[in-house]
Amino acid sequence: MCGIVGAIARCNVVPILLEGLKRLEYRGYDSAGVAVLNASGLERVRSTGRVAELEKLTQAQGLSGNIGIAHTRWATHGAPEERNAHPHVSGGVSVVHNGIIENHEAMRARLRAKGYVFVSDTDTEVIAHLVNSNLQAGVTLFEAVRKSVVELVGAYAIAVVSESDHDHLVVARHGAPLQLGVGDGENFAASDTSALIQVTQKVIYLEDGDVAEITLGGVTIVDAKGDTVERAVHVSQLSAAAVELGNYQHYMQKEIFEQPIAVANTLEMVTSAQSISPQLFGAAAGEVFRDIDSVLILACGTSYHAGMVARYWIEGFAGIACNVEIASEYRYRESVPNPRALVITISQSGETADTLAALQHAKELGHRYSLSVCNVPESALIRASDLRFLTRAGPEIGVASTKAFTTQLAALALLTMVLAKMRGRLSTEREAGLLKALRHLPIALQSVLHVEPQIRMWADKFAQRHHALFLGRGIHYPIAMEGALKLKEISYIHAEAYAAGELKHGPLALVDKYMPVVAIAPQDALIEKLKSNLQEVRARGGELYVMADQDTKLTSSDGVHVIRMPDHAGLLSPILHTVPLQLLAYHVALERGNDVDKPRNLAKSVTVE
Ligand code: M6R
Image (cartoon, rainbow, N blue to C red; front, top):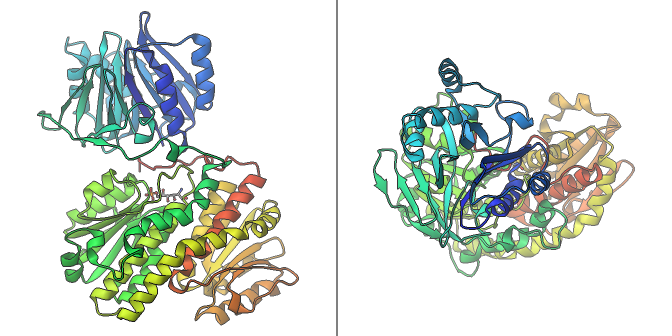
């Protein structure tokens, strides 16, 4: 999604702004731009190319200034054309914006009536004109922005400069992330910490409704009520190296191969212990877990799939009723609240607008207990939840979520164990066995990565296809869904997942010799039923690609390609079976020459509805 960087310094800020944008590229964008103030006034450069393209343009133009704002845009209102790229300008005012202004049409009409001319299709342009119009009253830029944001309905993070004032950069947020970077005689703002760590580790997270005035010497923050407030300065733990590619070709590749260590880090505090306790999820977790009578999981995309796996675990092992809902559906559906349900939100970024809104909606309906499983410590979701579990996957840059998913599953497996133990459904022996399996998980993941050469051969065949089916049963059905999502989002091959038992209720009609069918075949209670489903596919000429456990006795034959999973992980089997599917999507996308880390039309953090 869109990214913001702002800076004020004694040096030329253009390289800082561009470096910041480069570090935000992973979020997905289709145009970029930068505006600075200098002796000539306000200068702006925009491009519909990559940030590298923008950089060349700024160099050709010799763009320079001590104060400026920059943006990567992921189109919502208006096509990805230069005239819609940020920064937007009104007179000497320039604005970058993340989010969506819902009342932009009414405001557009009002501003037009005042004589403002619109040159873009964006909702953002109304902010530039509005600030400009409020500045006409002779107030400071800070006051003009404060007056303007009161009129905005929707979600926004904005950064504003004005050629009438070279000493102040003004920012504001409501419903979209924005943070300040505290430097020494220079200060910054960005929508994501990763854009700031090139210049400072000291970060201030703005709250909803905050407006901040940034100068060389410091920052002044005013909250939604108009009171001047102090916000804590955090020292970010994010290291510049963690967001660098190292020896890998793509972030997705790096992140797939980081899974053993990411899972080991996530489980670090339990793997050395002899037993598990609810406190892993927060000081009050024991009390909360004792009172709950059900679980409601809310999430989007890959995180939703993690929730679907968790449902099998939570109902099957802990014996607690568990519902899983897509956050964007739940937030607008009339549902029956249960104050004793534990509302679990799952999110890599912790900034997904639908998940945040779903949690807010659940609270408004009277749900008392919330727990978030999230990968970003200072995210809005973590701050909005009573209980939390941080997956320690490290920054995930590739748009296709990989290590975030397997670490979410590891966290949810742990939660299941805690809940099962508290319900008296986990014997000491069983607990010890599961802890042993968790300790072994990073090693098991490492060995699954060795299937890569075989997956490459599969990828050769898939790259020619237009459609694919993914089949799984029971707890591996959500894994089939995750495999299909991975393939479609980066290879652009149409892929669907089905619970294998559903095959003959419709999708079997699609199967012919051009339809590759991927099947997840662990040695579990449903394996014989799954084998029958695979026969049904083969009988219609469908080509089978099967990931089978050792004991399944499934072997390769004409039209049947079997990869043997090196390890059988019992309860944790879904985590292992995910890896070959990630590798398959990665290699098919490579074969097809796609931009693996930044697939078309997609963004990393979906901070708008
Ligand atoms: O940051 P979140 O986990 O809340 O993001 C949710 C989805 O947008 C995300 O998982 C998306 O589906 C991924 N691109 C899938 O790879």
